[in-house]
Each structure stands twice: as structure tokens, then as C-alpha cells.
Image (tube, rainbow, N blue to C red; front, side):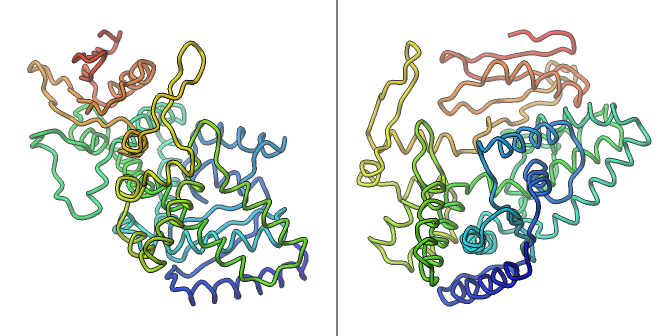
Length: 414
């Protein structure tokens, strides 16, 4: 970036920040970094500026960078939920693109700071992840890189099975299972008799990272809708030239346009917020931004009028063709809610850690209308067995009937 461009960007940041404050946004202190594509896509693949090494992150980086190099997709920015809040801008962005992105990330930072789902998250996780990375690298030197990577494979397979409410002070302790322990990775880290201490530490690290990321999984539609709402409002108040107005319209359309066959969270969130603003006024948006998650947002504010305006419908694949099955607003809401419940992951709990009196682990899948994918079971149970050290049982629903998959260390049955 040339000195003149950097100066213009600094002026735009100052102007947009003042406007955002005038409108009542309350964000963390902002830190902006302009990066080449290799750095930005590395952060995108790893999820953070510093994180432990794993083949899955490298695979994500290669895929995203290849798509960028071939003009198939592009990450314009990344923003980190931290205090101060770090935003990374692509160095090949135009000045106008960076103006839009600055306005967008100011919305994200305000959401991170004020939405209830983010209460209790570790705002120093950037530094903690750097420490985690150093520890795991040290384990690789001590116990062998291949051994550590194999263990990471197993831990990552269950890292999303946490109880996000521990951030709000839910009591710890795992020995009393009662109705089922949702914090599967925490339970295994605490209670498995076959883990070495370095392995337990890795599981606790993975759990801490997932607890940090979890609010973003629960608020994708709201978070992106809120950021899109503010980049539209703020950039439209800038003194733009005719060519910049055209460029802004094209870029904004690329962000918030509907996506055929899937939900664009930017579009859905923005449309819902605009609809609420029209009916209840802008003050209502700030209250919603504080209290709702995607599930409650959809349940409480997606109306029949809006589903008709957006032409939302339920569909399924029949004879290799997609067929519209329902346009009823309640059915549309239930399908969207189902896809957003538990971050979109299967809901598993620990039901027993001494099944049949042989120390076997029993996991229970809470059935909510979607069956577990057989390939998910085949891939995951052997990895859970690696962590638990004994036979692993998974109880679920298939074709309307209860079914239990069993992996004994050699084969999967059920």
C-alpha cells in the first residue's frame, strides 16, 4: 500500500469510527492490519493469527488459497473477537473495499462486545492460543510429531461436543452423569483412565478453543446481518464519487445477495433486521443484538411476510431433482432452527462410563429430526475409542427406531 493510500485509509477509519459512535455502536478498541493474501488465508485456515499446526488447517489453507488464485472466491477481511479487536484487511483491496470492510468489522466488534452469547468468552484467546501452540510443539518434540498429530486427530473429532454454558458459571465436575453430560470432550479429558497427562492437556486446550469459537457458531446469521446492516448505513453516508457508488453497489450485492440452494447468513440476517427496523424502529435492533442467538432470532422474528418476500421454502432431493415440499412459515422456521441448533453439530451426551460393568462408554445422540450420517459414525467412533481406551457405544435413532453402534477397537457393529 502506497503512503497516500495508507493516509486515505487512516482518514476513512477515523471518519467511520466517529459515525459508528454517533449511531450508538459500542465496540472494542480496534487494531487494523493490512496483509498479503498468504497471511490472510493462513489466518482464515487456522481460525486465528497463532494456533497449533495440524494437517486439516494446511488442507483448508491450500483450498482457500487455490480458490483465491483462480478467482473463485476471496476473503476481504478477518476480524477477531478480542480486546482490543484485531481486523485484517487484504492488501489488494481497493480503498472503497477497505472502507466497506472497516464499517463491517465495526459492526462485528460491537456484536462481540454486547451480545449475550459472547459473555464469558476469553478476550485474550489470541495470546492463549500462542501458548497452546508452543505447548503442543513441545509435545511433538518430546513424544514424536506423528504421535501428537494422531492424538490431535482424535481430539479434533470431538472438540465441538462441549457445554457452552460453562462460560456462564455452570458448576464443573463430571462424576455424576445424571441425565447426560453434554461436555463430552471435557468428560473424557477428566475421566478417561488411559490418557497420559500431555494428552489430557491437549484435550483441555481443544475444549478451551471451542468454547471461545462457540458463540460465533450460535450467532452466524445475526452477527453477519448486524455487520452488513452497519456497513450499508455507514458507507452510504460517506462522500463517494460516482464510480465509487457503482463499485460499492457491486461489492455489497456480492455480499448480501441470496444464494441459490442455501441460506446466505449475510442476506437473511440483514433482511430480518431491516424488517424489524421498519416495524419497531432502530432502537429495537440494539436490544435484539444484545439478547438473541440465531435460534431465538429466527423463532421470534422470522415472519410469513418476510419468508414470502425472500421466497424461502423447504425442499428435498427426489430422483436426483430438488423438489419444493413446503412454503409454510412454521415449517421453514423449524428447518432453519434445526440447522442452527447446537451450532449445526450432532447433539451428543455421555450417558454411562461403565456400561455392562466393563468400563465401556455410552454416548447418546439427541434426535431432533435429522439422523446421524453413517460415515460420521464410522469416522468418529474409532477416534473416540482412541481417547477412552475401551469399547464405545453410540445410541441414536435410525428409521424411527432406537439403534446402538458399537466400536470395540477392531470393528464397528450396529
